[in-house]
Amino acid sequence: MRALAGAAAGLVAAGFGVATAEVLAAATRPAAGPLIAVGGAVIDATPTAVKEFAVRELGTSDKPVLLTVIGLVVAALAAVAGIAGRRRRLFVVAGPAVLGLAGAGAALSRPAAEPYDVVPSLVGAALAGLALWWLLRGGDRTSGVRVDRRRFLRAAALVAGGAVVASGGAVAVRRSVGGARARARESVRLPAAADTGPSVDAGLLTPNKDFYRVDTALTVPRIDLDGWSLRVHGMVDRELRLSFADLLARPLIERPVTMTCVSNEVGGPYMGTARWLGVPLAPLLRSLGVKSGAEQLVARSVEGMTIGTPVATLLDGRDAMLAVGMNGEPLPLEHGFPVRMLTPGVYGYAGSCKWLSSLELTTFDQFDPYWVSRGWAAEAPVKTGSRVDRPRPFARLTAGTVTVAGVAWAQRRGIAAVEVRIDDGPWAQAELLPAPSVDTWVQWRYSWPAVAGPHSIAVRATDRTGAVQTQSRATPFPSGATGWHTISVTVS
Image 1 (cartoon, one colour):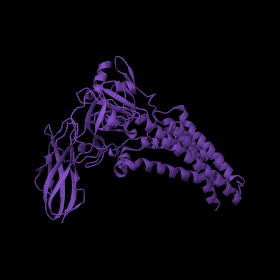
Image 2 (image 1 turned 90 degrees about the vertical axis):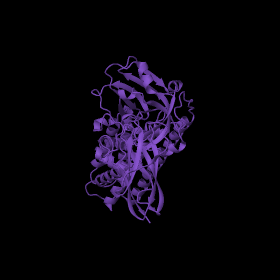
Image 3 (image 1 turned 60 degrees about the horizontal axis):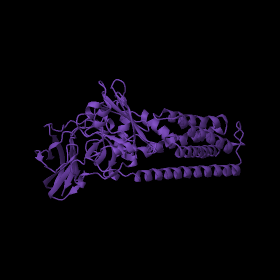
Image 4 (image 1 turned 60 degrees about the vertical axis):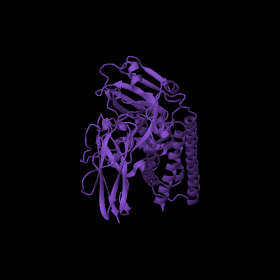
């Protein structure tokens, strides 16, 4: 029972300290919260294979799962500190101190860290230590004499109540700040595009609420729209700093573009098409005078992410842009509001930085962006791919004519043909629906005279250069997955 009381004391004290730290962070810099800071450090230190497993198996739940695991580890360490602290008061100080220093160190390790970021973790640790000392006071550290039960329960109830109040305060602050950010976004009135580009059927577009999100940010960065600016510097003749109003005052283009995540497995869901509104990037860079030898544009996010894009890619005529709008509205907060970079035909990790803060012209030798430093390819053109969306895998169908349908993509090259194969039969041409440009996916369909029995359905695409999608299977790392998407169905 004494060990149980010690563990309970450790858990209650840690809960009070963490909750207080999260209140401080929520009111000032959310990224400085100990759970968020440690989570970010864990993400950075996680091997690529583990990250890919998490994205593949957990999808958009990977971040909540990570934070839950971190919380459980903190709880376990806090329980141990409470048990040990009943006999040796050194652990009353050492336990919270170790956790506090770990949180502070993690906060300082973040790319966009500020000196203040250590404060929430250190204050939380100090309060946790004081709470633990108060809960365990009165016990004999050598004999382990039992602390008065009633006094312990009263103290634990007070501390637990404080933890609940602090947790509620953190939630309330986050909601208040989130509401303010949402209102700031809603107040934005985007101007009409000077160049609207090709028309696009609404059925080809992915609604903003359904658009995939894969990034390392455990919390959406807090950005003051009035104070935000974008710095363009490095190997240019003159540097430039643009406010959000400056960007909106420039001629804007609107283009339908399909984005693809490099983590997308064959047949995976991490891609979508939207109508993007933004400032064309090539004219902006040329107006600043790109110096000879500049090979890479490094985009930096307000939370420290770095993404590098070959300069030649940005100047080759594609509609790379500084996007401010998505499907007729300002960028959603989780998709980069107020401004993100967008590079058609390049995987997101190498051309589509969210929550932009700066653009730097440099060389490949001078700087390795976040993902390149972790082994991903420096140049990342999207590979030709195709997917069966209907019927769903393992569907049970009725014999007769079945419509097989899906999408195919080869951004910057376009799709020339899509073929479908049933079991080991011959490849058959699918019908291609109209597509607005080579930068969007193509919808296709095929009428299959289905007969009873188990069947496999495979699809492959040919781009407009004549290259046929490879059958060879490859994992997403280091430059994108390959292979034919194949599903199994049963016809009765």
